[in-house]
Image (tube, rainbow over all chains, first blue to last red):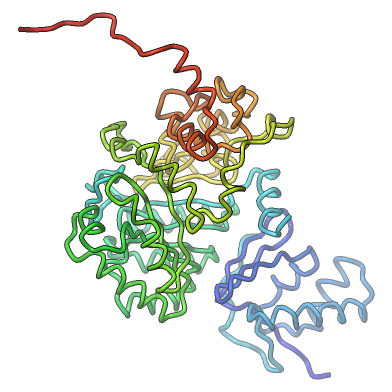
Length: 104
Length: 362
């Protein structure tokens, strides 16, 4: 499977609330709350770090999760958010595409 | 429970101000007869000061940001403020009269990812709307703005304040909203001016007309449900707090003053002198507002309507006590259900008040 790079869309509103991220799409007002693991992926979505690296360095290490299972979960999460246009996904690095980091 | 309701509950538990309303100016190009503001500039926050406040609000966890006025577009830096707010990832709602919005402004609002624009429309008839705004041609310009905004795919809500002089036009404005593809909200609340002047309360809709409005299906939806007698209040109601003011929401004036709500003129601090979070967490005034519970209301705790009334603690405060009744809301509850409030019964029992001394000069 080719490497995937993810970046946060600029057409969103987002804020950390008690360890979980609230995200609302400015395009269709869909509202999401991300659990702790999804929040870490979201915060690491800088367009430059491959998803597999985010999973290995941020998820497996911090949450003590099996790598294969974590990767599957992350792929599913990325697919879902990209369908709503709030995460951008590419096989190439996405430079200059991320809004500044929300409070953490 | 919806996701948003869950987030609201979590913010409440964590003491986080989820929503903040900032009036960035009180200046306005309209002179609405019912407006509670003066329209002079007494020293508005500068662009840099507003940027600083926005950064503090983001750090405090604010998600929903309402930018309002006055007329927001009277500030030359309005789009800079919106741009900064969006960079800080707020969900931004703008309240405007739309008079200064043309194709370019609409496109910019869309580009910046503004969530919603709320526009005041008082009537579908130009002669009525323009008489309220005191700006000739204002309805035409406002409708033109709505069309520009809609053509950009933006979400627009028409806010229809009803008062003496336009209360029969609710259905007409609603039809206009439908034609323009916007949502519609009606509000029969007229509040005293920020300086305490109550003269504009004479514009409030008389009771009989209010009753008619509350019983029109096209305006309120299911009339039977909307006008149902209040169910007995349980313990959860009596332990409940009246609204989000001071709990998950607050208001900041163009001069940096912090209040529990735009309708609750209890000065609670100033962001020019203190950090926002210091005010939010430690202001004695905000803590006093947070201590209000239905069971502690002086008159309303014994009222049949205590669980369903729209009692506004800000309006009650302007009448003398944040724990007392708000007679405008008593009237609404009565006209909606036909059941008098405890406050109305108390007043009726007390009989007409007579002055202690009467003097007639010939």
